[in-house]
Image (tube, rainbow over all chains, first blue to last red; front, side, top):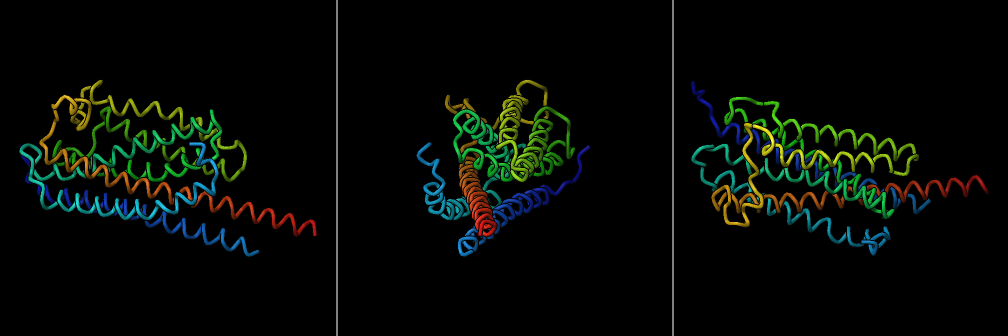
Length: 46
Length: 247
């Protein structure tokens, strides 16, 4: 028995989750780096 | 390697490389994925779902590559006491876990139309899931060790080395055990000219892996900079507190 699957829907879902996960990882890493480096720079002024 | 044991020297190099790696990685990955989505032909047996390969396979490689980096850095930390090794291992953990999760999720999405099931408990899928759990355990352990200030990173390093036993199990699982999962897409057979896939897919796959690897490198450098900056800030704050207490 063959199901009538729209294969492209699965492809789009995989791309959205794969790209979304990668972009979220990059943004979170850069934001954490900026926060940490700003905190280090502030600590120099104490 | 010990030339970069000095954090100041390493930071100069990391500042120079972080943005170029991320920008080049984003450009290569975007071009390959756009081609994978719109330009690559549908495959004879897998149909349109073959396009998932351009995300799934690089994610699998980086999931395993991340733990390989943790294991090598842990070895360097335990044997040679390289001061940046523990930081490199901790920095690779979250990106490795994210790519292992992307591999599992995209594989599951691919499996539904290809196998008729979202998940099967075969050797490849189960060992990859174990790798994701190992990442979660490593992240929690390394974080707890860093917060407590006890152990000096040795417990997480030993965990990183022991967990590396799972990497060859993942790689050889489709050879050792009967599996719905296809054999390795890339391997030594390519050197003898027996590539298991057509040239356009193979080149696209290599380019996607290269692009995602550049992104992985940029993210690891950014996370190493984060850990180093936090350590420097905490050291300064402790020193300042001691100066105030003495005054």
